[in-house]
Image 1 (cartoon, rainbow, N blue to C red):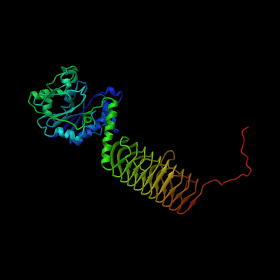
Image 2: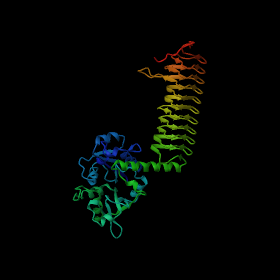
Image 3: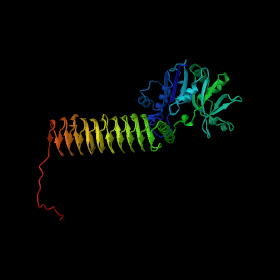
Image 4: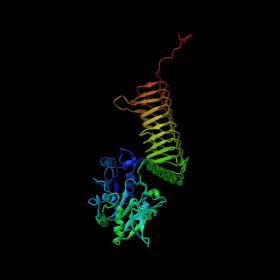
Length: 452
């Protein structure tokens, strides 16, 4: 049956103690509600409807890339009332799955289990907890069939001993769900319309109730405060670390790596502690990532050695390169095979040729560099004149001495040598030596001033 997903994302999240709407707080650098949306799309949902409320403008602006319908819940009258708001926007002929914008880690496979064989039934995702306090309890009859759900505040002493609890996640045919919700009331301790009341009505109408459970309880844990968010973050990261190690990636400490995006990491990669990998990152086999490195939206080839404390963003590093320590590759930095970028070097929008070296304390920006170039310490490409950026072209086999300024636009031809301390403002022809420095003077018998 075609699937529609309704995501409830209207809560204020007072316990987060934040001006940011709760569903926009981030887990692995992605809003909570986006995790839920992505899962809905992975399930093949024909449509997604997001019910928003508090901070709605901010939620819609942050999530404007969603292929979703947006419906406002103007009054916060409970989960049943929230789902009712979707009925004018959702295809009621579809199976409707209700998810929550602050429950980010529910697995696709768990929801598929819930949906499988649920046609003509109401699907209920439950979980067994050692400490069920605060959750609605699942009521079953002598035949173990679900007869309803009772909320914590409405449960009697015997019902509060039940360990099987409601997660809030359910599925139902749209027309059936609408009919059931139209028959619930708010005569309870909260004065709200409980979505869970539909199960008692379904049982009275002899509508079968199918239950499913997740493999782990964290899949259905919601985020109500920053402590819970931190707990789920570590669970999420540990799951990724376990998968990486299973696939042949060596981690110095699986508790000290953060993946915040899509990481395609080959086998025989070694990652030291405190690595942060964001966005879309690809790392080839045999590469070594030193401690405290940050890699964002970058492609790293095979047998690359990235030493400690490097930052790479929107960069490409080809096979057998060496980077760092303390190097920064800014957007559009491209290191060809066997290139070397050393400590305290910054590369921006520059191509470093095959086998070329920029070993220390240099800035190379807006540059096309050939192969087998050696750049001495303290070299700067002066690419900005205060208004516009200009390009530096460096040919093959060029030697650039230390403490050199290459004032762009400038072209250094193949085989040229730039003496240390030069300021180059004009093009240099092939094989030329350029020296730009004041003559050295020596004064014999010089007496250093003394303090009076």
